[in-house]
Length: 371
Ligand code: PMP
Image 1 (cartoon, protein in one colour):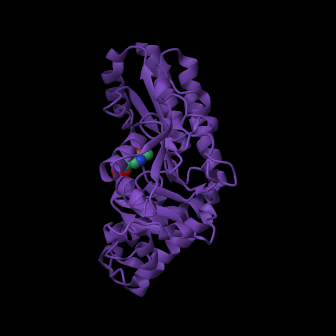
Image 2: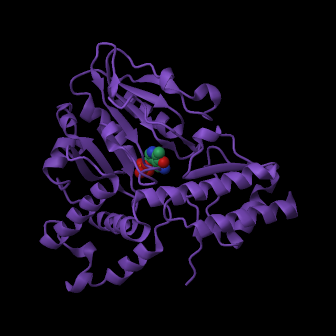
Image 3: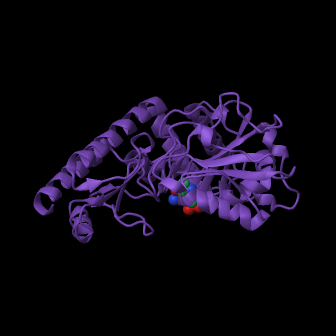
């Protein structure tokens, strides 16, 4: 068996220790004589798995008691719709900071469902190479919440601050405006102050676990702002009251997410340690890009993503050779998103530092031979 280094943007690499444990527990989960996949979600054995996953996630992110943790389904894209349904019940308008393709999709969905959405700030003018500053954000007078994408996975653009002061965002009339964040490609990449947010959501298939699952972290007081006309499966309140089991949840993905949380706690040592490793990995790759003159990344240094590093070669005619040779060298999935081309190396939590070292060595060698 050979496992290569996988730089896929998602579904992404999972920790090898997690996969090995899932393998060991696959046929017979801890002497129960069945697989987790085959358990009733209402059984006490599965409940223990589900509760443990939530407890570990709460511990990792130090989630305050006044937040509910929901394990739901449909990916982050489902949350593009669920979020406005849940927060626009009392009227008002969804406001957005738009920094790339995923944020644009969230805006499009809100507009599609509710007719309008306000772009409170955008980095479009600079080609999404630097995030708007706090002072650029202009909330509408009827803002019901402000949504942003902490890390744009395709552009490789990451916020270096959390919008709003520590005491929260305010409308001109003084009302608090809850902050909602799509954290799909950066959650768990380092420590986080959850108390600054109204809602955090993240598709699982980068730093959490297998695709399909989506985790939402919702402040208690926001459970009562929902529209009456929404699908009940989207309701944060209904999900919270049912322990995320309104219907059959994605039981196996939830279990694997729990194994990832345990790995982060016990093998890595928590999110401070994870953050330091991620900083080091990203710094190494960006330094190699900047030093080369052959590879380049357009993002303002302060907003460069630690998780997704897009780069282009000085001569795009060499792209195919780069991809073929990197794959040959056991470095998988370096092709950039189809909408932008070039390359992209995703350095999620489960991508080891040795993978970055191998990539940097390969890039230097390729440049020497072909550059
Ligand atoms: N938001 C971001 C930031 C993403 O990276 C992605 C997926 N790459 C999505 C949303 C959509 O996620 P899903 O495919 O789980 O709906």
